[in-house]
Length: 97
Image 1 (cartoon, rainbow, N blue to C red):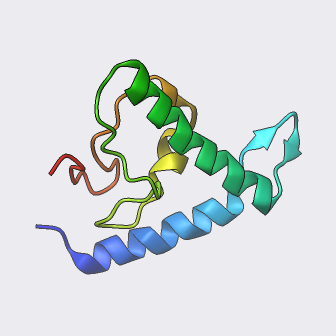
Image 2: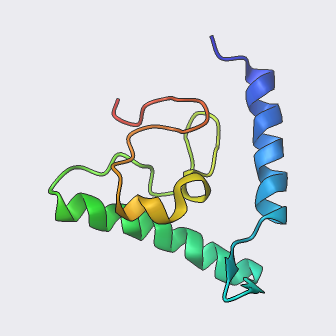
Image 3: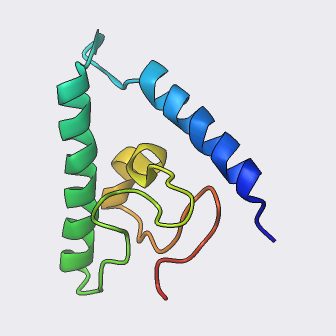
């Protein structure tokens, strides 16, 4: 069974990690606005993958897990163009239901 307190603690840790670990491009740290655009581009990458393979997109369009709030885009980043995302990498809930 999933412990709500553990999820909330992990969510806070993820938020802190997100703030501290902006991706590096050409050795320049992205601004907050550029980072947010990058994360939305990640959703588009998964959408393109699903369109190319004629499969439904189960990943939430917000890029966040509906159960624990994990930012899926940040976990998978560039692999969203290569893999079919059907669940949360942190709480392991499925998006297919």
